Image 1 (cartoon, rainbow, N blue to C red):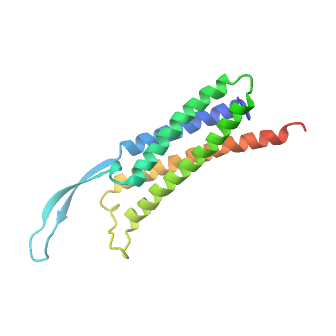
Image 2 (image 1 turned 90 degrees about the vertical axis):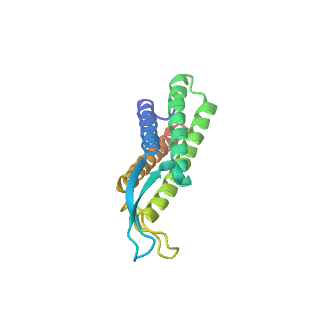
Image 3 (image 1 turned 60 degrees about the horizontal axis):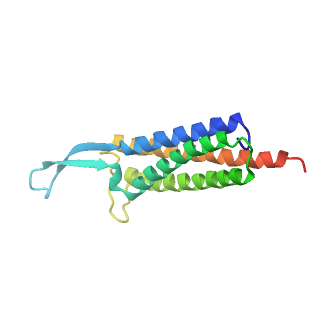
Length: 173
């Protein structure tokens, strides 16, 4: 393993686990509610079944896809790191660059999902978007949890990059 041995292995397993769980949490996010609906204040209301699913919003699809990619990469990079006994510098460099790509991918997807989540929680009166998290509370909490797991995964991959940089500083000149 490059950049720290056992610590690198633990971080790669953690990165894999966090992103896998984030992908699963997003993928299973669905909530159905019966909402009263009124056409006019003078007419009686009637109930409408409304469903919130993760794939209805592109930001949540991006969050799911980014975490699937990162979890698969985490597993693959763990296997490559374990197999890289001869410490190939080119392979170590490639893995470090891809670790950084995972940081960017996970951070941007979590940011997109969080931005949509904030609109869902607060709404936006300027464009007349109503808040929906008061109706779909579990759905919103699940997306928030997946976003937090994704950001934690990004931090783990960033720690892997930092581990390599620190290892470069310790090399004899």
